[in-house]
Length: 626
Image (tube, rainbow, N blue to C red; front, side, top):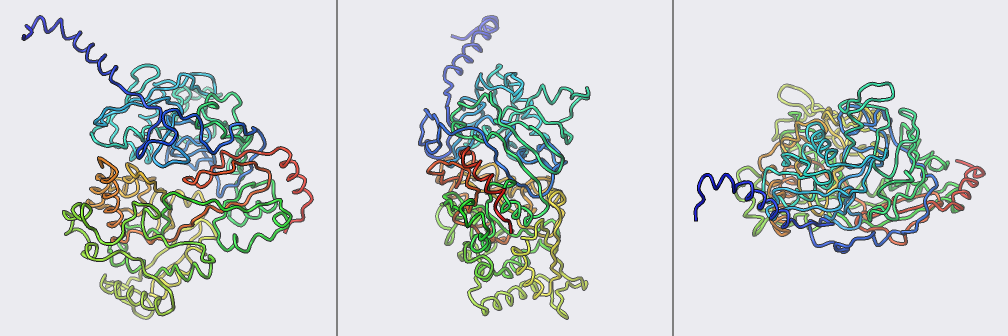
């Protein structure tokens, strides 16, 4: 029976209330979020299975950092943040709503939030906060902190701006629940990635400092901020060092992701101007305790100093089971000279990985072929089936070879291969309007092709030296410029470079972060990770296919297609990847018998053995140095 207008007026509040109650009753809360299979721990996650829940607390972890710092605010593009702060995630000071798992891909476990909920169409997500979560001043972490943080980051942080591009608003449902609303449906990842949101203390940032001056989160600062995490700033000397101390009454010490982790009493970071100084600090002892070795030659032949020979320093290799990080030479396509795909292919032909790996790196590395190397997401062969159907509408905008040939990077197994590759590179340059004359590669205006490789460490000479030499053989004026870390960061952030080496971490569950890597909008946003300056409607469309993939099969298909398009457009010149993480450390640590294969190593699960620490300190005092 139809309601009269008057009856409808009186019935409306009841109907709305009933609908709201029905929706509330239907809401299903999850204590763990997974984009792939269900987490191995189920909904009753108590701790990671590899950690030592009884790990002792205390001792000092000494670390080194390259460069300098002038700010404790990592969320703006101005200033260089100190070690322990990060522009994405919480670092040592802040907690996030959820924390990404160290031992499973695409899984997040509770931290500030104790549970999440989302509807079947993925149009929104609700996060319920842990009522025990609090700031270091004892004030509870509230929904208004989450909303305030989201609004600030969405407006001012390049990373979060892209990551949360489809999140229209955050609102406090009550003191302990936040609702995020999305501008689209079907994005399976959006509810999950909201758990990566760092939460900042609204009351502190809107307050005043000791001098009575109002704080401004849009400006750099060297006032230690209020946090919620396991550590807080104990002391610092601007640009020189920063010391963090463990928070004894840290609210989250019993939260499952923190059990058996964050065991160091003090974390001290000392800054140096170059890699060699850091190496000398490590072998001296007492300044750097853990050295992640990125130099294959040194790993193979450089550990002959007294502390290593007497057992005070230990070497260990940790296997990696995750998608390999894409490390590549990146030409800046914002500059006209790099916009022709033939030029970029020619540059790729000039890079001789095999000789470099054999002569400089002891054959320790494998050539990176894919942006998703070492995973099922890497493309191979020629597109077929669903992938071909996905790419077919873009055929006229893509290289014809993409559809008929398997993508392979050039190989230099012998001198003849190198000559052939350089000859082919010269031909491509000619086709692109560059000709060799008197040993110079010039355009029709007589201007020589120039490339300045921007680096920040003498080790860049090993990475890029032979590559630049081959470019010179082609007639390019190829030079290298090494700048200090602050200047390097500023120039990369503002895209002020010809070519750099850049690293992009990929996961087995790609999603919204792909916009920041390759998206057209990100190309113009200073601080984004689209350092190449890619602006391609095809890439944008395929990224959306990844983000809106309804299931795993569709995600893999779309990722294969994106990978293939990136490869055939030669947006970057892939370098190499290791199969292990090589770490040398002073023998003062205890560690779980097994480390998480997905992360490779979890230093947070290590601890200091007090007796060993004292023995190492004595050994440092008496050991002769090189």
